[in-house]
Length: 336
Image 1 (cartoon, one colour):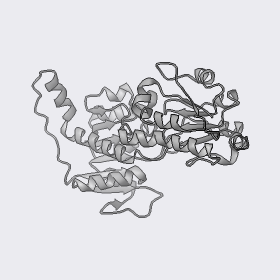
Image 2 (cartoon, helix red, strand yellow; image 1 turned 180 degrees about the horizontal axis):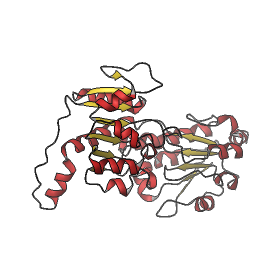
Image 3 (cartoon, rainbow, N blue to C red; image 1 turned 30 degrees about the vertical axis):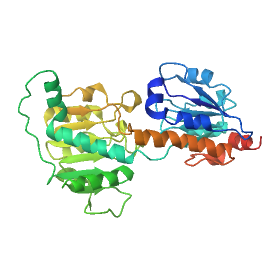
Image 4 (cartoon, helix red, strand yellow; image 1 turned 60 degrees about the horizontal axis):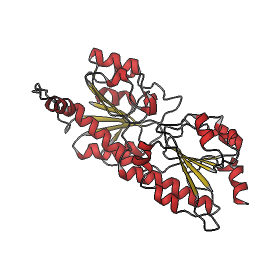
């Protein structure tokens, strides 16, 4: 088995460096070590560059910034699996992979605590202008008085009660916030969180967290109408997907004061990073998609792919496979 790892050097060190020795310890059925090939460039590869670099490889382990475009799969006849070293597969053409008989699989959801904690951190910064005051001091400036607001006793609204939403609800409750939840697919919430209609959540919440999945139906869900329904001066925190926000509408709400503060870890720029339009606003705190960037999560997601490759060597379909029924190349590989 020959494995190609797409991570550029910076991402390899941050996300996959600790798992790389474990990957190299894997052995083929005859006991020989598997072949591991690394990205030869100092940057992310284009699809055409990936096709050239991964020719002859059986497996691609793809960083989240490496798309799985339609032309990739038929161009690599030896490829049996495309393993996304992340949970999001929105940039992977699963239909094209299936048509070529290539398995697509993703990592485990190990990012939940890290991402929820960052959402809380962004809320704290928006409430107390921590970063702005720190930057002033670092530049030897006397910060102006910046009155903040206490989170205890305030109301948080969570739209989407999945893994991150439910975990975040516990964090927010723990610091004394009232937590409102809206999710059309949920009928029960835990703890003291309250399940409410969306209109009530937007009207009552001092801080709103859109945590819905990115789908065609949720694209631009935070639009001008959504923002107009929010409590005037409320805070918006997005650590989910950039596609959920209509950036122009959010910018207009910041300018008018309808939106009091904005915290972003995702957006419509490259690698899901916040776009400059919003990130440069004085009432925005923006981080460059750091939600899962902790050693604990990076190790877990990288080790997910090591586990998946180990399963394939043993003749098993790996966990978290998205199209096992059409992975005919993998089935043929098992018979070799």
